[in-house]
Amino acid sequence: MIFNKKMETMPREEIEKLQLEGLKNTLKAIKNSGSIFKNKYKDIEPEDIRTLEDIRKIPILEKDELRKAYPFKHIVVDDEKWYRMHMSSGTTGTPIINAMTKKDIEQWGEIMARCYCAAGVTGKDRVQITPSFGLFNGGFGFHYGAEKIGAFIVPIGAGRTRLQLKFMDELSTTAICAIASYPLRLMEVAKEIDFDFKKTNLKVAILGAETWSNELRERIEEEMNVDTFDIIGMTETGGVGMGIDCEAKNGIHIWEDHYIVEIVNPETLEVVEDKEEGEMLITTLTREGLPLLRYRTRDITKIISRDKCDCGRTHLRVDRLKGRTDDMFKVKGVNFYPSQIESILMKYKNLTPYYNIVLEKVKGKGAMTIIAERKNGFKHEELERLGNELYDFLGFHCNIQIVPEGTIERPAGKAVRVIDKRNK
Ligand SMILES: [Zn+2]
Image 1: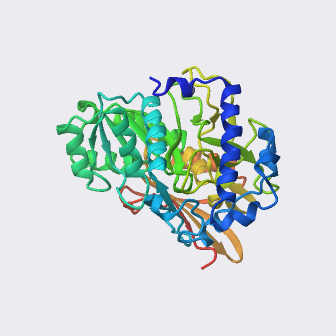
Image 2: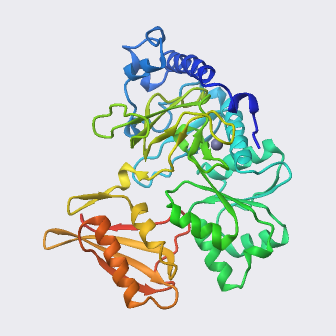
Image 3: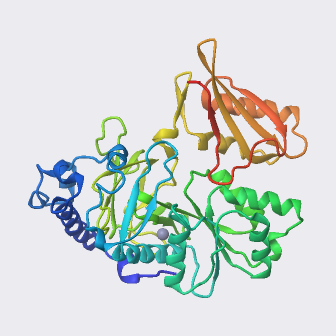
């Protein structure tokens, strides 16, 4: 089902016309504002933007620049127009605040409504929203979209896993929205209390905010008996809902009438060809409080296609996010993302979805230990096979520790998978 047929199936030429207009307007809005970034764009005028390619004349915006503008120096509209704020988690430094206007909240509702419909969720559904309603944008974003499509909302928020399961059963919820690792907790508690997902009406899980491998995805779909959809978006871009995969499951559509996507080489910052992997830059076209020009998201992906999708939508598709440039690790000269290790581990059905990657310095050299949990037994042959597979991928031997189920800590929020002790 398509929420906004006119916009979502618009021919590419028309999308690009809108983008060119939106790009100029965004640049104009920042230049005419009291934002700290006024100066950043002093050498470029909206008239200099004649084609979409001219976007490359605009300097790139770094996360640190937004951090330094804390709390509100980067906000483009006057404070009387501010409506509400959300904030990035700030676990790695000063947080970034997005002060949103009423129009921003409406834009959010629109793109979230599109995401729900892409996941097959309609006004007839009962939606259980499990991310928190607070500074983190997840809860509210899912709420606005559900409101817009007229679904019945169960705004339970984060935690209380037993109650979540009880609601799924007793309130007959049909769709669940969550941080990508939360289903692991649901699955685990379900086992403890003999809860059978197959006996519920649950059919869809919309998951995001973390990188999750295809193998983990399969496991969630199988164990929870749901179809999953991968949703993306961040506080800076206006929250969850910037894009989602559709029933064709062939990449994540990004709503191009609201955002321009570019993929650049993370070192040279040059735009790369379609189908080539790199870091995603986002330009917002319709956001008022915090418009962004060429913002470095740090997410690694590639443009899969700009052609019309089997679902009928014409908006381009990017690959599922592989990781963020900040969580790429280098051990013994090899670069890798935790999601790539996860892909290998999750092929072993005897392992739980919980794991840790421990990085250490031993005698001045990098060493890596993978701690994985076994469900029942984990045979010696399996351990050998796992070791070989990891060696094939990494090109060096790492230590593997198989521990009993329940050994690895279950975090309340986002999953902590890598423990880096190298600088301690
Ligand atoms: Zn599609």
